[in-house]
Image (tube, rainbow, N blue to C red; front, side, top):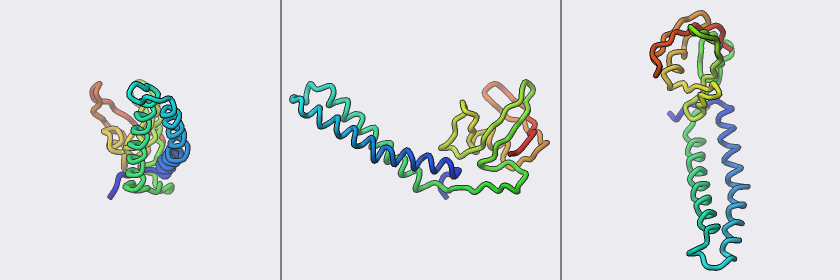
Amino acid sequence: MGKLITKRGLEKIKKELNDRKKRLRKEIAEAIKEAKEQGDLSENAEYSEAKRQQNENEFRIAKLEEMAKNSQVVKHNKSSNSVQLDSTIRVKSDKNEMEFHIVGSSEADPLNSKISNESPLGRAFIGRAKGDKVEVDTPRGKVKYEILEVI
């Protein structure tokens, strides 16, 4: 079984992959061509930079292709009351209320409240329901959460 991912997450990967293959590859190839036309490549900073960008882009394309091929899209069961992959939950801790969107590990973006199902926080919420209380070990110590809503 591959990495779990939401439908939106897979669409995002495919969109980036398409952009890198169709648009970015052409832009980089054009930059390399222009740099070559300037002559001596041994001291040509533009050529070196374009080649570096090409290598980075090809590495990212390979990574995205692997992610798309080895990911398993999980269907969100909307009739379920329990937290699952692709659930958005509203929780309350001692200090405040917050929302989290539970996503696959490749989609995680904690700064935007997208937490991985494989993270300690994600694992603590998976399978729980509205009203459940969970305690999670975090870098700042144990934090208690109450699930207010599963969306």
